[in-house]
Image 1 (tube, rainbow, N blue to C red):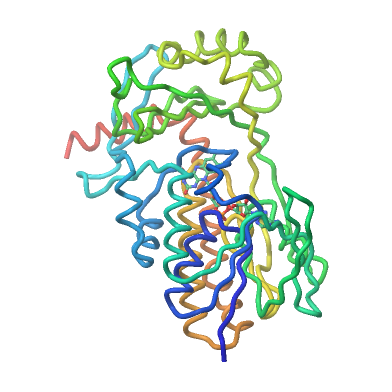
Image 2: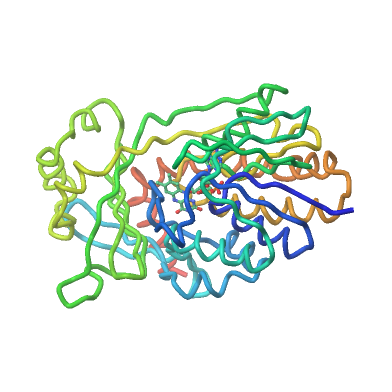
Length: 381
Ligand code: FAD
């Protein structure tokens, strides 16, 4: 019997899961809403770079994709905390460079995983947005948004790696209650850029995750291998200051000069970036159930989107991929494999979601004080 599975979404989780399944002998079709980023260029839309931690690396190792990813990653040894007075302090994550995290480009990582999936034998179908699912006839309907064409695909089971706004989740909810709750954080984010220095190097310490904690809000900056940094401003959506009061490029400059003065000379296109880049929304998605018997299952952001403050959304999605591939290998009955996957991963996802929310308070408000105490303790040892 051919063991066939259909994945929805060729993002981070979709690329890795397709690789793992194809490597284990599954026949895999992957349908992705966007065009092929290797042909059309990457159309990411959010967070240009991401922190890859050991959980995610472990999963990439299982697919043999760790080497290609680390080749283009920038090591981050710890947090570089920028105080209001312009002072900086590096707080290491671990005892030495064996305990670090990595800054990776979302676009490059996605392309590496798509290449790995194709090499393993998965069939990738781009410009195919899942539009509707007939779970009785086991047919999925797709639309090509570039030309409006419709197509159909007969499936054995659908694996939903189609992100926080998952169309598969919506289709499943027409058959079974998943217990969906979405809690908005009430804060948004905007990305800005620190370009390379005039001599082509990094403008600030490259091997660190930079944080400017300021109480109710903060900036962070992660390095990119082309010697730039992606700065993310996290700010409430309402109140003062918020994205309601800091609206224009002019407002942003005044705000940064007051609260992030040492960052201002690093971001020459502050006004343009601020006016041009969208405000991203942040929320947590809770589901009580992740699967519809043996016909469909959700993973990654489609199952448990979280706020980004622990840098663990992708890492957690990658762990899901390994767990799901293992359960599918172990248990021939798809409904049982999906149920076992949910039993293993749902409590873990809930724990990481809670930690991600807690870490926002930690990073924006207490990082100065807490890390000072941590550093002092380390120095005493
Ligand atoms: P996605 O990456 O969203 O991929 C979903 C894919 O499905 C996309 O390719 C999309 O085009 C496709 N798709 C959507 N709808 C359809 C459809 N109807 N039909 C077909 N295809 C469809 N995580 C970390 O681990 N570390 C970090 O440092 C980090 N930083 C972050 C910073 C920010 C600002 C944000 C917003 C998130 C961050 N995350 C981080 C979280 C991380 O981005 C997500 O957890 C991760 O992208 C989830 O992967 P995914 O494959 O489940 O979903």
